[in-house]
Image: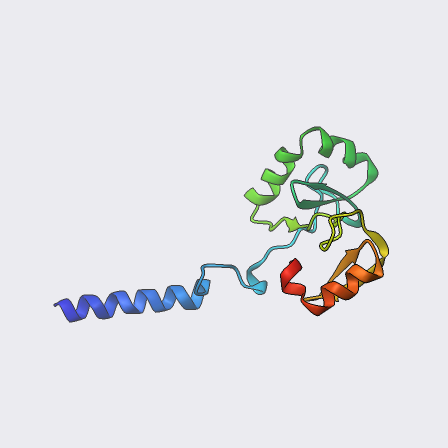
Length: 135
């Protein structure tokens, strides 16, 4: 009887891993991206959006911007309740990772697919020698 129980639990665990992945995360094919405006329901315009708490919500028109700003949590919750994955945004880098000084957006390097900005070329060169030290 014990062997049957262990076997059954193993099968259930295997099905869960196959369906949900090892960490329970959604795969790209399971993600439901935003296509409609949470304010008026129109088709989104990717050039019109608002960021709130590192989340980006796309809107259909400029008129929806103010309504969204009045209660962003309401509209984010609406999207999430519909199973939509709200886009995440990284905060803008404003300080040099080497010195902590304000960055000059014309001085940067690519690191792990992202631009890293610096206050001067010297800091960029220092960073390139050992990026892990500064990240």
